[in-house]
Length: 304
Image (tube, rainbow, N blue to C red; front, side, top):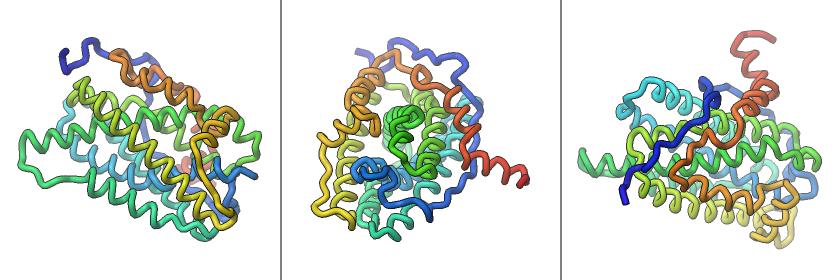
């Protein structure tokens, strides 16, 4: 079997847009510890994003700055530069939630220190000789990012359509953060995969790095949810379980187990292209109405 794609994945026309970073900011002083009322498990399962994303997206930016010299297509280069700007803002926005959690009695530092080690040390730069070995490690990380971005786009599409969170009275500021971020993940969902295809495109590497990314995400997410539940000062013997996740997926306040499993063969299909999933039109429409994005646009234009 060839290590290259047998067929070139086909992007969906009209699902591409010029990417730009929106310099958003959020005010957290009125956000409660359980921002999904009466549901600490859903709150903390989603809160894991604030633990994983700051370090993870800083790592994305670091890797992509290294891969820029390998890009021979100017349109893709522009997309990657736009992606870097958006990911840097995502990292900053989620990082700013952490002091609020600490104020509410939930110090995330023990967990975030482990996440920082993962991205900075285990997945960071290695002392390798120039040439084949150094390029191999760079391509592995580019492929890992493409696999992770498949799931960030999946989550972005989910949260844009998660009406159950509105019905449960979820904190509007947190919802805006999640949906602003989710909309930008949908908006730039094709960039990481197209970059991987451009610089490497090996199908075996795509499968191998997907398996690594999926396993790591499941492990880190359940570990983060358990950390939050165990350290929540308002809970006695707080616990997280896959059953609780499955039940809330059926209620619509978390992604459903079935939808997550069905996303696997789509990514592994030789005909896969990220533009085939989600809607740029929906993402852009949310970004045109997001309170944080509108405030950022007004600040950029210097209007009150």
